[in-house]
Amino acid sequence: MIIERKTIYKMETPIYLNALKAFEASARNKSFSAAARELNVTPAAVGQLVRGLEDHLGIILFHRQSGGKKRLVPTALAESVLPEIRAGFDKLSVGLEKLKRGNTTNILTVTVSPAFAAKWLLPKIDKFQSLFPEIAVRLDTNLRPIDFIENGIDIGVRYGEGHWEGLEAIKLMEEDIFPVCSPTFLANKSDLSINTILQATLIHDLTMEAHKSFPTWTKWLEYVGLENSGIKSGLQINNSASVLQAALDGQGIALARSVMAKEDIKAGRLIHLFEHVEYKSPLAYYIVYRPECLNMSKILEFKKWLIIEAKSLID
Image 1 (cartoon, rainbow, N blue to C red):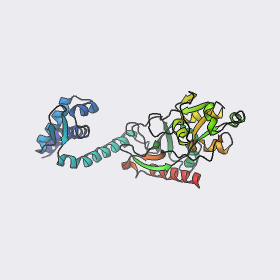
Image 2 (spheres, rainbow, N blue to C red):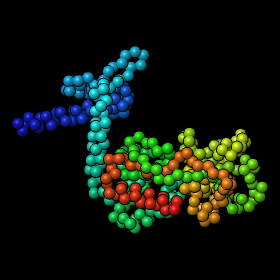
Image 3 (tube, rainbow, N blue to C red):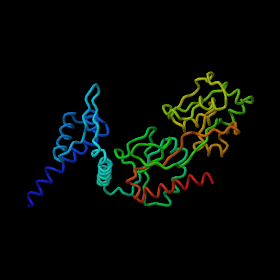
Image 4 (tube, rainbow, N blue to C red):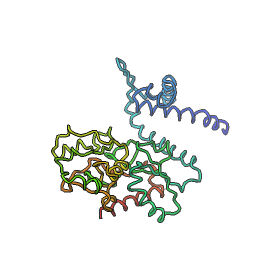
């Protein structure tokens, strides 16, 4: 009996774990070829694994559609079990990640954009460190979203519409969009008004230029009723913090995001122009994390702290 159990463990468990991965990837991609690219194997290997799983279970998992463009369509039964299979893989990933990290459970890896880190998080992070000295915060600053599992990320703050695959998102802060410039720049532009703003050098933020909802000078000018065909090329920068720095240096007028510019305006380093114009960003800041990790105390405490800090700015 012991030998038989060992045989089953050695032969069936690895084979059908791979087969389940092949099945899940094929169902999600509706294609053996696409699944093969994702799993870095051949389409034939994926097909063989799926057929082996079907033979083992004695059921059909996919309807193979023929015609000009072949697509795999999961059967109703196969579709119904996919959430449990995906949840199982998520739990396996968490377990493997814990093993990989070993004794580094006191490290909290946080992903934020470079600008958010510089202008909002870093000036406040010492408060969290004083509250939780046993947690070592490791910042991962990237302009683009990264894979949480692959990069060992615990929690993050992202700017967008609140939808990122595989992540739970909780709104942290909304913000206003408005032009800013340095006091020196404004002193040299005594005739500056909404109607003459196109005659000044505009500083453009290209951080998320591919996002259709990202606030730009074109959108703001349309909002205030100005033709924007006269926008000069000006400065184009792909970092929101650097955009504000250029404005601080007197190089032009930047379209600022209130969360980023708040402290510079409060200190008088930047001037909030045309305060009567209220333009809300369609995007917001969200706390993001893998839902299966929320019960980890370090993630839960950091999430609570972020919410408290954001609320204190409003109050």
